[in-house]
Amino acid sequence: MKTRKRTWKRLAFFDSGATIRYLEKQAREGWVLENVFGIWWTFRRVEPRTAHVWVTYLDQDAYEPQPSQQVEDLAELGEHTGWKLTVETPTMQVFYNWSAHPLPMETDPVAYVEGMHRALKQGALRVYRVCFGLTLAILLLNLWSFLELPLWVLSTRAEWVLEDLLLFVAIGAELVPYELWHRKAKKLAAQGEWLDTGPWGKVVRWVLVAYVVLWLTGIVATLVLKPWANARLFLLVTALSFGIGWNLVLWMRDVLRRRKASWGTNELVTSALYFFLIMAYTSVITFGYMRLDWFSPTAADSWWSQFPDGLPLTVEQLRGDVGDQEFWVSRDGEESLVLGQYQGWQITEEETGPEEDMDTVMYTVTLVKLPILYDLCRDEMLWADHEQVDAAPWLAQEAYRKTDGVRLRTYLLCYQDCVVEIAFGWEPTQEQMQLVGEMFGGLQ
Image (cartoon, rainbow, N blue to C red; front, side):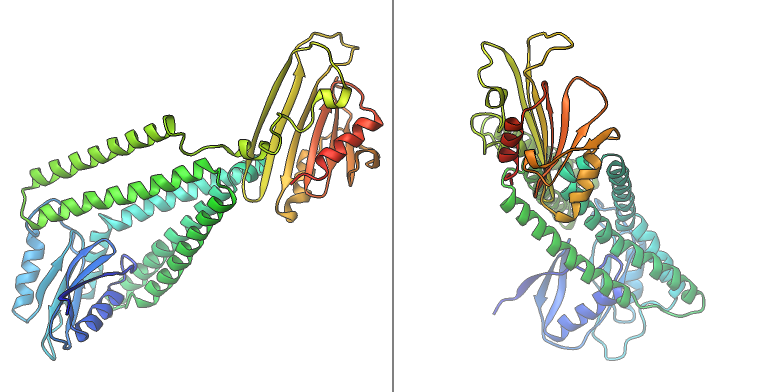
């Protein structure tokens, strides 16, 4: 029979009510809390019996080997009435009492609420407020970018915006319930009443579960559907590395603290470990990126791989033999799960007169993966000066021509799954229009 067990328990950072109920249930099953490290709770086996548990929030130095004077005074006071300090962390203390009808550990709700708020402001609450503000700022920045450049945001940042929104909701799901609870708890405490944290904490737990499920689903879907998503893969590796490294640092700090290492020794060792992990991560990622070609190919490479010879449509295909001309050829692109935009250019390097044709073709292909975005893409790509032309020669659903009088002949062509903007250095013929339709009409 095992004498210890470790459980993963994620409660809202302020939910003392749920914590107390959970620990009392464990005691009835024969388990007493021995240590808390992040979301990992360690229990030791005891005789199953009824226990009364109380949780307090008193802030103390994370590197100090001895409990603060305030915690020692509270523990000494509790011992007189049967309350034993079992676990103490830099922000939370857990007391057990095995008496059938113990005296309350605390009787002043005002002091409890104020002390809890004071301790949380020094730790979790500060982090949540900063993260909430940062995610809100990023959301507003992305909203402004979407209003200015919607297609660029949808093709480059769609997943990032969704993840930031989910993170904003997840952080808000903990922060907002706490603020609401604290506001109401202060009013009731002034009247001598206690307010349970349970109802607020339950909302937090369900929202966080939904967030984790959606986040993991998004990561898996992205890596399956977009195996070339180097930036997101890099972010995932970075997040996992940071999480593991940060937990190692906290683990080392807590181990040294429990072993009564001095404040200076604890801070020096944990700082050195943190620096070493950062340097190790940087070295490994740099070596993998430079020598092992990690996190590639890029989004553009993936789509363009359909055309191993270069561009899907070239001047040679359209006009035939062009002699010994030199061309500047470029292709690029960005893609998300909802939209892709790819640019291909073949521009002649020969100088021509203002009335002469140029052997130049340039196009932007916008691949619409979410049908609801199709009209938005067409309207955003359509110029102020344009006229609708016959779409039949292009084998398109709709066709428009730019009428601003510039030298290039520019058209916007609407096909079933994509919208194509294409510019010619000459006036295209019927045969060339049909070739364009055959090439772009079936793209996906």
